[in-house]
Amino acid sequence: MTVDWIGFGYAALVASGGVLGYVKAGSVPSLAAGLLFGSLAGLGAYQLSQNPKNVWLSLAASGTLAGVMGFRFYNSGKLMPAGIIAGASALMVARLGMKMLSKQHSS
Image (cartoon, rainbow, N blue to C red):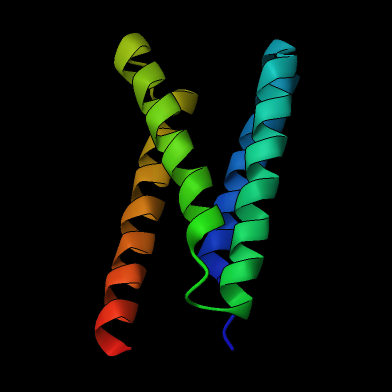
């Protein structure tokens, strides 16, 4: 059983982004969304560490963030925070998709 360090790192990035948004701009919605999605991503990383086939929570959290923050980045053009989170989330979606495909072929 291996620990999903990448997933936990992604969760920490999302949660710290929410905290940073609150500290810099006083944005309570950023804090709430960052902590909610960071927690979901952390729980997903824990589930993935326990069972490598259990990707659904991680996929839902990162896919939702990729869409929402990608849209915000498209509209604002601001790399921080929307572009960073959208890019990291898209990479997580791709990583989880590769995991799903490799598990299908090996089962």
